[in-house]
Amino acid sequence: MQTSALPDLAHTDAKPVHWLATATAMAAVVAVAGLLQPDAATATASASEHRVATQHGAAPAAAAPDPAAVTYPLDCGAAGRTVADSAHGDLDGDGGPETVAVVRCAAGSGTPPSGIYVVTQASGAAPRVVATLVDPAQKLNVTDFTVRDGKVSATLLGYSSADVPRCCPDELESAAWQWKGNAFIKTAGPAGATTRGA
Image 1 (cartoon, rainbow, N blue to C red):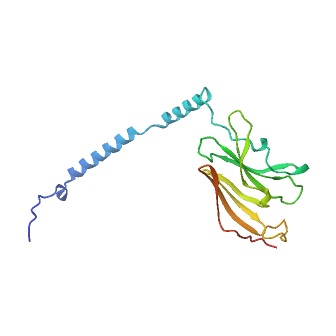
Image 2: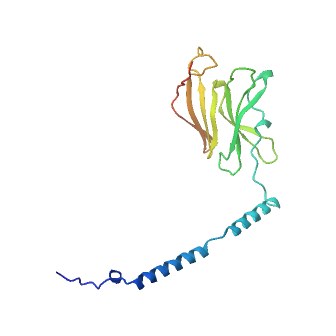
Image 3: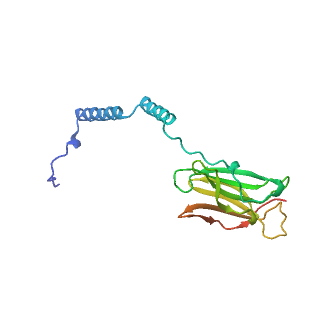
């Protein structure tokens, strides 16, 4: 049997006193780490100070434009318009929220086609439409509408021909719009037939 040219390692011949020293050192490290953590009272106090500073002088975050206060490019005659759904978010990354509204004519029955509009509001000005993502002239119905992480998403229901009853769209498209450069770019999943029961 050959002997190793290396010296014996200390841990290969550990005694109980070595284990006790190691445990004591580990306990000291854990105790010091615990002392370095911020306590809950400090975090709460700074949050309260932030709220007070916001209430007394700091400018509040801009409110999203009111979708009901906008004139939409949608001719409904005497029926008038209705905002069927709306959501807000910072779509262009400027720090201010935009509102996205699903708008249609206020028909007494049936489901009139919808439009999706992006509304913005400059400080001190009236809200206004800055983009039309879906034009009601496309004769689409909008469902599953969301605004999240700077992206507008919706499911668009349409008709394959003029013979399809207006009550029962037979085409479906998943669509999303995102601000890139200086325009909203649309991405869409494949259009397909809807699965409606009789």
